[in-house]
Image (cartoon, rainbow, N blue to C red; front, side, top):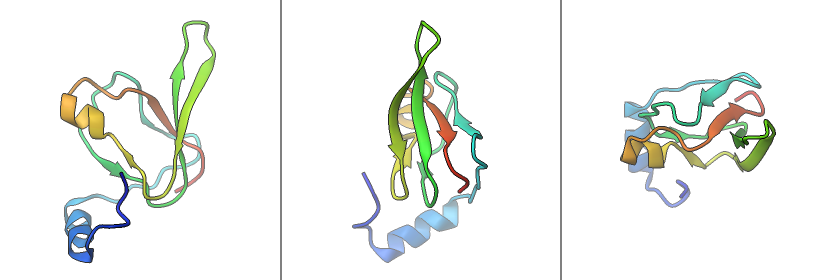
Length: 91
């Protein structure tokens, strides 16, 4: 899901109710299982979604890029975030 097809008025409304947050490289946005009651639109930079395996190694799930959304599932089901999210770049 992205926002490329949204009308400008819809994007403006999201900006009005949203909050701008800049993350430094390596900063954690969400931890797996932790409550996450917001929807995040990646505007610039990239976010790494990963899981810590039982053997202690980190499994890369995906990279979130500008236009991607984070937090939709955990916001809807209230079960906490499904992955660890960490900023790969400042943005």
